[in-house]
Image 1 (cartoon, rainbow, N blue to C red):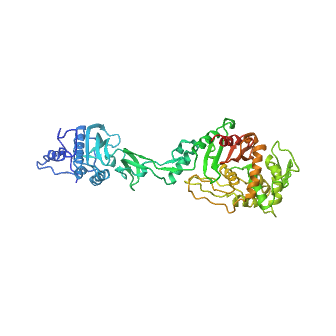
Image 2 (image 1 turned 30 degrees about the horizontal axis):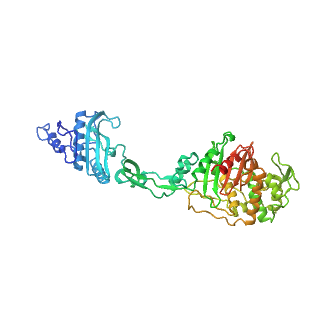
Image 3 (image 1 turned 90 degrees about the vertical axis):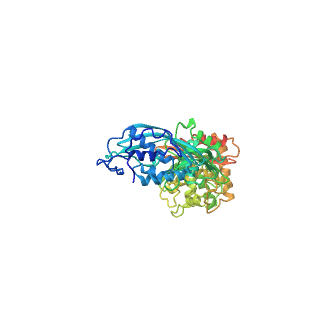
Length: 552
């Protein structure tokens, strides 16, 4: 049972209590016995937690009991220390766990002072002290406190909870010393250089946090020190570091230098603070090299699902070549307007009518009616308009991708069962067709790399393959046409003069405004950008793409 602490001892122990100390417990026990009301020896009584006085014990009494408790603790009389509390069973187990978990060799206490009535434990007097513990790996010192209660029978006890061991320690937590558990240090999510922390880039902070939560780190060591463990033994918090460890790292495919360029590109002043997103890929393997966004609409680089406008003409052209046997020189008349399935379509301002236009010419100037006419004529059969969907999925790998690390991306949509005017609108990236900059960067990468490589952000992440590889013939046709767009077509004002660049612009109508798109590649990367509210692709997304192609 826990004994009464009805003490009259003063100055029985010095302020410092250490291992092998003065044995205050025995002194106090002797001094607390006295005469009972009937003149006989007073029977040892038990502190009743259910009968706590609302009056805190005096400072002197609270300090005496605290010294007794700490002396028993420091001299390893843990059961005796536990009986100085209002929960001897729990206290005994916790004190033993403290000793074993820390590999404790010595513990001492000093600067024992009353702090007056406790603001946390009603009816208690707070006593503060400093702890110095010699544990595995080093010496750990910290301030602590106890709350001393008084029962209606004038018996005293230390109010027990795990915060007696260390301030704020939960009752379902414990302490450990030595090698720190892995959970107490956070793995760094880094760029492909193995050192640049992705969380330093505004566009990647959320992505880095997601990867850190879901991916497995490599290398590193935790160092040594003192830590808090949860009830399952996992690290919660590091309290003291004796030897510093090296954080484990999760390496990504991000190119730190290109990412810095992308962060600046989406904030180009010529965009006038419009929401923008961009993605750059290594077209040889699908690695995501940069991903940035700006504006209030969140991460539109990988989740900004919008109609891609004329950038979809890359996929439409591939379908015309693969499924209809056409070539870049096949006729594709460019008229001012065209009606398909009772819906009227027109070209962007500045596109001149050319009845003798070819597919290549219509692509260079981005003539909508050229692709609606050929697409509707060659790729829609008896109401079946699934050819564009088949090309997008089978050759360009469009579908549900996992880029790694639990990072969510929005899937593109090229429905196989479109009806009415949408059967024609799909060929110019309107209607029910939607995509993200990530998807359109992959389209350009498929053309330049002559094959689909699913975008990933973690090296070694499993990549889905396309059911059918793009043919060298089709890829060659598209490369020639995209090069023409960059040198003398709609992208020339931004990309003209850049060696080895192929591109396609897009301007997509959405409600009462337009969105600007541009996707391109050079000898190393494929990139796409979206600017919400952009008046045209070249005069909005074009600025973003140029940054990435010229400043890395």
